[in-house]
Image 1: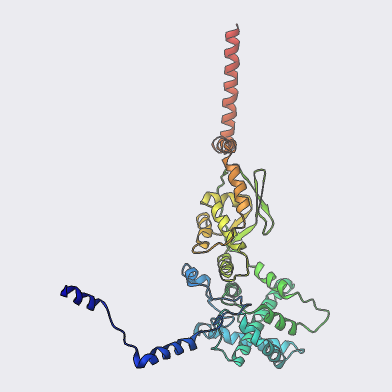
Image 2: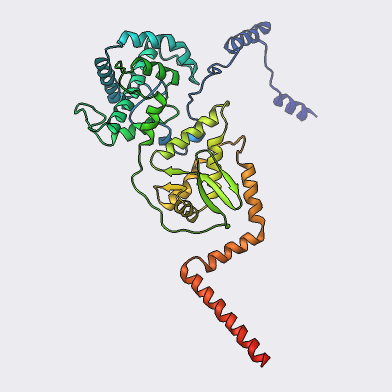
Length: 398
């Protein structure tokens, strides 16, 4: 009994209340002062995020810039110092060529947008003062705009003029490297900032055509071509015909699967990964890109499946067939799909597959009509069998 009492005493620890509860009251006040009435760093309109570590750990280089920092998340990195000097050169070059806009005009414009700009980022930008943020937005925004302007001019003009002093275009590879960095979710400026800067820096000559900012950027990004092509053999599956469709459209009708065209190249991986990361972070956006990746991952289960889609010109795979097949499965790692947009489509394909006649017909095509010689052999065997039957019937009849 005495041992039990000692054991109970050891199991309980007395916590004294300091100064009649004053210590606890002080703790309560301290904790209450730290509480935030709302989200500490989340504006309702924010749409530029840091990629969650659970996604970034699979391929960090697909989410982080290599050459240039755009926006506040990677601003000030020592590896980007050379490009900061290039931005200064580009801004000076822009102001020298435009007589209708001054540096003061740019500062006045972006200064008015400074508060709204902060709200578009999913983190507080307390490390940047008002002046620092305005300067960064002007340098980064004008660099991006002027970079794309120069590229489009070089692509569309008859004379491929290259400024020998231009640090970007005197190196053939640099523009594609920069395109990689400019696709990244963490490396963005608010669109309205770019639009204001673009409008301010338009060419004052009325006879010169100036495309919209959207067309300018799309022209630059879509001009980037992959470097090599690899696609060899072909195979049929499930007796379903594949047909190239238009962007964003998947369809299935009478055994024909219509799929939008896709080219898999060097920029495809960071583009898809960052679009999927955006959908994972932004609650106002649908999961269309994530659904697309899940669907194609189910379709392309092997290198043979990839070769079929290449043969139908649905996918231009500039990787090896095996790497192309593994590409979409890696995209979907650790992603959450709140709504799969192709549920009905998959149900139709599954219903088609469950009809045994289609599977038998596919087996016949694969085993006996995979090449002309197999087909000829089958036809010859059928003719021989028919002649044998006719001869047998004739013999019995006689």
